[in-house]
Each structure stands twice: as C-alpha cells, then as structure tokens.
Length: 202
Image (cartoon, rainbow, N blue to C red; front, side, top):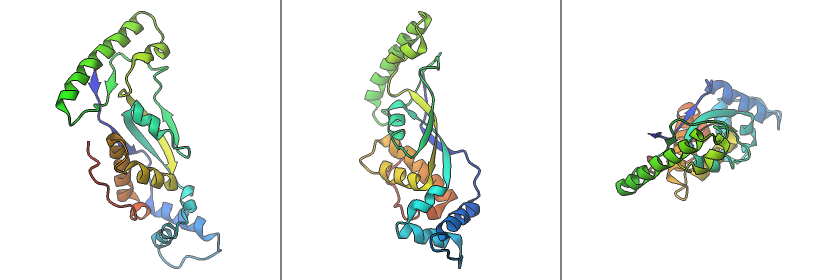
C-alpha cells in the first residue's frame, strides 16, 4: 500500500498575453469596438460587469490526483471534460490511496489496518482469476485517482468559488485552492476578484 498526496498541476504551456488578447478580441465583437488600453483592463471590466461568457473561449487542462470520492465530485461539473484512471481496466499490484485522516492519528491507525486488509482481499481476487472490473468492488473510496480535467476559464472560476467554500470537503478545497493559486500566478486578472481561501492545506 502506498499513500499518495492529492495535487493539481497545469499541463499547458500558456502565454498569458496571448490569452488576454484573445479574450479581448472575442469580447469586442459584440459592440465592434476597438482596443483603447491593455487587454487585462478590458477583461477585468468584463468580469466586473458579469459578462463572463467571453471567458469560455479559453480552456486549460489540469492533471489532478485525488481519491475516488473527490473525483466523483469533480466529474459532476458538466462543462468540464475529464479523462479518468479506470479501475475497470487497471490491475493494481499495490493499491495507492489518499489518507482521509491526515490530522487524526488514531483514526489514521485504524484506517491503515483496514487498507492493508483491503489490499490483501483485492489481490486474492486478482490471484484467483477475477477480472479487475469485478475485483474493484472491494476497493475503497480513498483509492488514488488520476485524471486530466479541461475546463474553460468561466467554468474554472465557478469550480473554484464552489469548491473552496467552507462547506466543501477538505481535500476538494485543497485541490481547488491549488488551481486558484496556479491561476493567480499565471492569469491573475481572471481570479483577482475571488477572495483568498482560508486553510486549503490538508
């Protein structure tokens, strides 16, 4: 059994200036207006006025590692396009899991024991000739899941605002917080109106 840390990483090599210029170009067609300043000023104005549909012209792809439960939540975003690690086709020699109890040593001790038994039961199925698509029935929700998620900038803003709220699961808040921090670094004007997220660490 191996314990994996959740994470989110942007896989695109982006040119922020080109992205903002594209958004401005698309946005100005509605009034056939000409650029009079910096593209980021125009984009900032669009966001402030709630004209976010123009942000849908740019999409980004993230490589995300989380557990199966969080993956299920992420893939509910209909305007995002996920490609997910399949437990039906992958045959695990060693299960990889995300620790759901990083701040509770007692619960973590019990959890580790349960995971060792779970891993053993899974291997008994596989060694007995059971197909991975059937053997997966004993795998836990904390099983590590790997996915690529592509979403446009408008949807990413929605995901960040929804999934960094205090009502969201801590692991989800952590992943959404990482995406927010990446956008703050690469395309700050896109997320500068989104408030700082409290305690996104696990």
